[in-house]
Length: 65
Image (cartoon, rainbow, N blue to C red; front, top):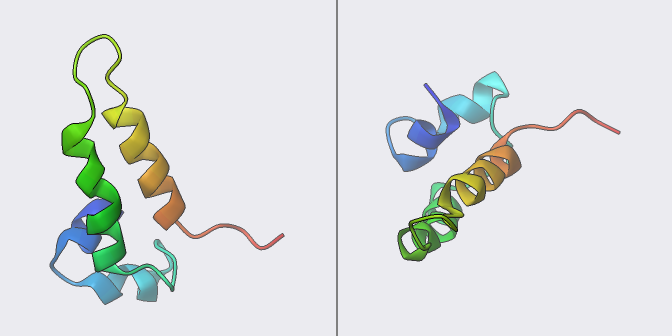
């Protein structure tokens, strides 16, 4: 299951348990962040795919620095 599916519903804690999404990720935060995607302009300047990629990248666990 992808981080998107985990955040959208199903089992939000499974991604935290298997380490594929951040421990502090919250489904409500994801939904609020992605709420702006429906307003993103479609067409040549469509930024929604890039915006979604940034959101999903932010959900993934990061290596310790």
